[in-house]
Image 1: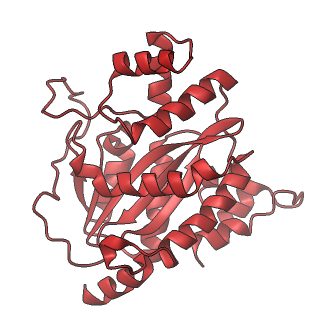
Image 2: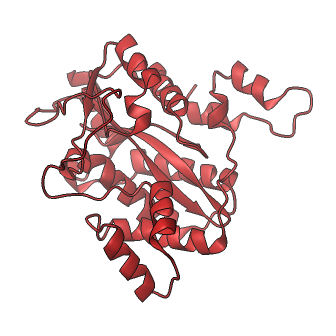
Length: 281
């Protein structure tokens, strides 16, 4: 049974069987069932929404330019507060050249494997990422997995924390439903350099690929997915809570995979291209 259908079977007002037990019976990770939004002040939420939309226009802006932009738009904010909110929305400034930042030597680092790679079939390469989703009274994080050959979203989940366990659970569910990809590409975020994530991919013999720091081109396909999700659903619908957001995103990803025509796919749907690509594999 598809992951989304199993989720819809959870009965939250069932006093006889706890949500934890229902999740276990349906083979769902419990963190993918609870949607308690992260809470911030109304002013902070307004700034975070502004930053989230601004990222698609100026991903190369750093703290100083963003601070000036926010002040020009009437916000009262200092650098310390701005930096904290930037971390919450996951803003990663894109740089035109290699940075000289010293990375954590204890973290796992893997090369970028997609440069010059000819992607010719479904499940050859999946890309994963996390993005911030604003709501009326808080925010949640969205994790998604996209098949790069077909642009088909093979898995997604919502959470109020960006934990490696949450990401791994969603990947495992996608693998159970669609099979094992040859490569999974991610950025160098802490979730994707964690022991739990690395061991998950290694256990399935999946080649691990990671974007270079500050390189826009490395994750272009997942960035296009975020732009579509936000401009075509999130920014058009103000959700009151996580349940409403989950239902709306369920409908949107159903549309995205099975009905939305993609120019880059010759005006075919991702599901059609994914099916053909699996047959060609």
